Structure formats: C-alpha cells, structure tokens
Amino acid sequence: MINLYAIPVISKNKIVALPQILQQNMNIHEYQGKAILKSFGVRVQEGIVADTPEEAVAAAQKMKEDFGSDWTVIKAQIHAGGRGKGGGVKLAKNAEQVKEIAGKIIGMQLVTPQTGPEGKLVKKVLVAQDVYYPGESETKEFYISVLLDRAKGRNIIMYSTEGGMDIEEVAHSTPELIHKEEIDPKVGLQGFQARKIAFNLGLSGDAFKDMVKFITALYKAYDATDSSQFEINPVLKTSDNKILAVDAKVNIDDNALYRHPDYAALRDTDEEDPTEVEASKSNLNYVKLDGNVGCMVNGAGLAMATMDIIKIAGGEPANFLDVGGTANAETVKAGFNIILSDPNVKAILINIFGGIVRCDRVAQGVIDAYHEIGNIPVPIIVRLQGTNAAEAKELIDNSGLKVFSAILLKEAADRVKEVLAL
Image (tube, rainbow, N blue to C red; front, top):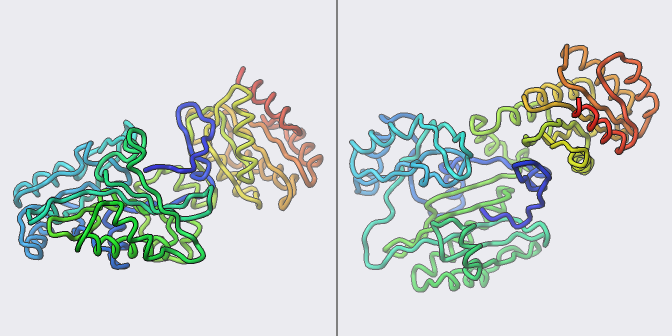
C-alpha cells in the first residue's frame, strides 16, 4: 500500500504515520471486502469462506458446480498483505489437494512482510474460483486503489499496469508507471475520468468498456461506505475480456461506523492488537509503539508534543494514548492498565490540559486510580495545566504517592530524565 501522506511519529524502530493515529480505520477480511464490492456491482473473483478442511472441500465442490472447474485457489484470511509470499495462497487442482492445502494453512502462523516476524494465526481460508482460465486473449493484471489525498483534500484513484506486484517497489523503481486521477468532491467521478483510466491501462474493445464500469462501481462503493481505502491488487482482465477484483483490501473509517452498523459487525478483533482492542472498549485512542515511556494525554496535538519531549529527554514513547477531553478516574485507571500491560514501560508521563475538564478532577482521578490499582511499579510524572492547575499540583504533591508533578513542559522533560536515570 502506498501512503501518500505519511508524517512519521518519532519512535525507536517503528514509524507510525500521523494520520494513522488521528484517524483509526477498521480493516476487514478479503472475503468481506469482496462482498461489499459485489453489493455495489463490482465483479469479483467468487469464493466461499471455510473454517475447516472439510468445509473447504465442500466449498470447492460448490465452486465446481457453479463454474465447471476442479481448480480452486485457497487463500488465508488475515489482515495483512503478501500472503502468497508466506505460503498463504495456494492453487489446488482437485478435492484431495484442497483438503491437504486447507489443512496446512488453517492453524498456521503466517508470516508476511506486513505481519512482522511474529506472524498471524490463520483461522479461516477463502476457497476461490480459478479465474486464470485459457481463452482467446492473454490475461493481464492491474493495480487500482481509491484513497484520500489529505494534502489536497480530494479522493484519488491510483492505478498501474503493473498489478500483482509490490506496488511500493513499482513506485520506487518505475514511478512513471503509477498514475493518479484526482476526483473533485463537488461532482464526483466523471465518465471521462473512468475512460481515461481504462485508456491509460492499455485496454480496448470489451475490456475497455468493462473497465469503465468496474472503475465507476468501485468508486461508488468507496464513497458510499465511508472508506479510507479500497485497494485491489490485482484487478484482472480475464482471457475473455472480463474485468474483476481478484483481491480486496478495504479500510473503513472508524468515525463513520455509526452510519454503517452492518459493516461495524464485520470487525474481527482476533486480528487486532489485544491492547488496542481493550483501549477501544474504554473509548481511548491508543497506538502501541516500542519505547520505554508510557504517555497519557488529552488531545492528539498535545500527545504529539508529549512524544517529542520524551524523545528530547532521552526516552522513547511507548505508546500514543489520548484519553479525550473528559478524563476522569475511570478513564485514567483504564489508561494505566493499558500502559502497564507493556513490560517495556519504565515510566509514565501524564500530560493533561484542563480546558473542558478541571485539572484538580484529573489529579484526584490519578490518585484514586493509583490506590485502586495498587502498587504501580514505575514512576509517574503528572503535568496538569489549565483550569485549577495549582490545586491539582497541591493534590499530587500531598498525596504521598510515587507521583511527580510538573507545570512546564521542560519540567516534565527533566523529570523524565531523572526517573529514567534511576
């Protein structure tokens, strides 16, 4: 996936884009993305999801009845790309191979370039039709995605003739093969733009017409679902000149899920970081990083500044955690539990601006949460600024707890230095 707007957050071994933090997206499985695409008239590679090898065999039999071929593709269903490189996509030529391959893939810890060395456990496979059948013309793979260019405030369609490959490598080695079509939000995708894309992909005749329909339906699906990205790699021109989606990577904006409860139900928490899932239950915006200083902040901008001062102080941020504008004892307690679940955390910096919420209430929340959790094994630095900041500092200083108060950002940074040196 090409990220047009990555602004790196400082972290030791991990780069996280600022938009990734500010706008959380719900990923869904390939088979779920294809179902959404199909509901908007996008032609897709058909398939049936299976949880066991026996279900996979039954699915392959159904594929044979519908499409007349013994050949099927067995595809691991995890939230990561590069599955084929890790052995998660295999071609089966008969029912025996379907059972054997599905049996190996289901239950495997699939490692791909996007999962990291720990990999992901495969719990289901998609048994998909073979769409690379012989015919009068050659098959051809393309890359097409729809996403938001935040710098320009417009959706764009990105496409290339080099489908089925690592698009990042294509962009690096042959950037002239990557094309972009900006969509004016006032008028949406225009017919001439869809035709331009089909032309630039080198298509003609029936394939050209079908690509125009494909692009039009794909953009409609992206727009109507409030998605942040639809990435289809590859889009296939079959040997009989049909255009269809062989894969589907769909990210839906979390902030719009209230409008799509049916899509919200597609969430697979087994594919997500358990800590981030727990944070979402408490309405906390949390992204795990790889540092040694936990952060608890209200407001994304303040969180970014807090991570900066941790870096300046010689530490590394262990997380991004925004408790929102109404922090209280319960949210502070939830934040503590989440941060402390990371064994790498050596200190916690709480940085709250009291605008909507009073600082003394947050301070009392910190004290109450500290008592309720019990012995917290790491030092805590609390910087509270804004309404009733003086009263908040007095509460912290008189609490008798292992909590250090600060007023200025520099004081907080100095405190971080001190506790890390202990």
